[in-house]
Structures are given as C-alpha cells and as structure tokens.
Image 1 (tube, rainbow, N blue to C red):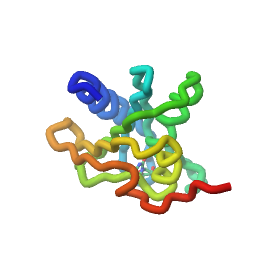
Image 2 (cartoon, helix red, strand yellow):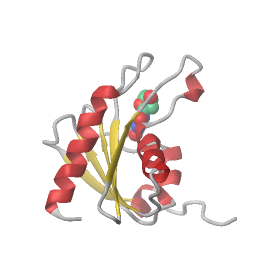
Image 3 (cartoon, protein in one colour):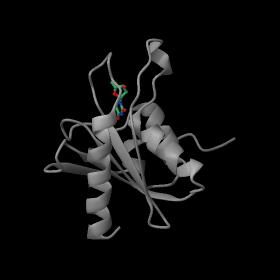
Length: 129
Ligand code: THU
C-alpha cells in the first residue's frame, strides 16, 4: 500500500462513519477496504430493533467491494471515535478470507491509527471445509 493509498483508505473510512445508523448503541463505525486493483469501497454499521440483525461497518464495506466484482482485498481501515476499536470476532473471520491483510484502526480524525495484521488478530482462523 502506498502512502497515498493509506491516506485515502483512512479518509474513506472516517468519512463514511457519519452515515452510521446506530440508534441503539450510539456507537458509529466506518470502514473501507482497498482492493488489489487499487479501488476503495466503504461502509458503515447499521443496527436494527431486532438487535441481532445489525451489521458491522467492516462487513458492509466488504460486501460493497464484493458486489462491485472485487475478489482481492489487500487492506481494511476501521474507524471509531477512538483508535482502540478493533474488528469483532465475526468480522475477523470474514476478513481472514482475504489472507493476512493489513488492518488499520483509526480514531475519528485519523490522528491516531493502530496497525495490525489479520493473523495476529485471528490466529488459527477456520479455513477448512
Ligand atoms: N461495530 C462495528 O461496526 N465494527 C466494529 O469493529 C465493532 C462494532 C458496530 C456493531 C454495532 O452496531 C455497534 O458497533 C456496537 O457494537
């Protein structure tokens, strides 16, 4: 990932966060993925009064990329108010589908970004059927 791509990825993740629909948790999240082709797709979390039906920002961003024909994701940025945010367990399993990709975790303005890789976030991911 180039420095320019990294900046664009973080910005896309922060920008989409304003669209989060989180009337129950009041926890707004934005996410963006970078594909091997160099495209960026974003998504925010949305919640439901049937609580379990909500979806995390990470999986919305991935679904957006997939829906646009992308199959290779090289990095993801997730943004919360603070950079202590990390993808939940379900999202970690979904993200591990794309290999040991880089995961950036940003605060609301990009002034603090923690960097992880998927294998350290989810060792021993399920990968056998
Ligand atoms: N959430 C995300 O969208 N991504 C994360 O990484 C953590 C949690 C959402 C799910 C729910 O809408 C709200 O944040 C509180 O858990």
